[in-house]
Length: 234
Image 1: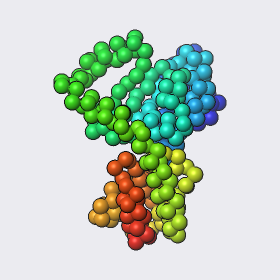
Image 2 (image 1 turned 120 degrees about the vertical axis):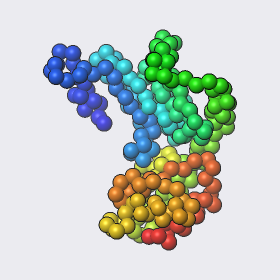
Image 3 (image 1 turned 180 degrees about the vertical axis):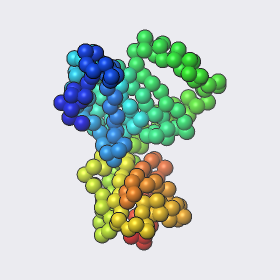
């Protein structure tokens, strides 16, 4: 979304009383619906400047922010420099069994703890999950580059299959979208079910689009197997 379009969408307190006033801008990186693409740091900085100009807060949905960091070659702290708050999923990108964290100023976190309690949040003996999350942070971030390389290799292989289409240039991290033939009798849901029957777990993104996500437990042999399954199917 262009900066000008974001600014045009900001609703002023002096505007129409029938509409809510804008208080927050949210960005996601990597952007899942765009195939795991990364927002440039310069873009995030400009959105941060825009937010300050209008007295707004900037939140970054960083569910896969470590993927973005590796792909861009930029530290996470630099990516989020302009943000007021950041949410990070520990299970999606780096493979912890469960868990997310929210990051912000001390004042912000104090307020969020109260809100968490108000909404019934909180868990006992959370240290067990924290231990797994620390392993993910310390060991799995270094494996993300390999995930990205395998995703690119798989995307290129799928794109060589005559009846499939993949925007290889859009595969910046570990997500691939595969467009399949528009056969009303065999769409993405049917294809995903057939792939599941042979041990390949993917999901339909649209009627004729399949979403594939790689992680550190997917080997080179697995990638070759997935390619062979698609070749047999299409």
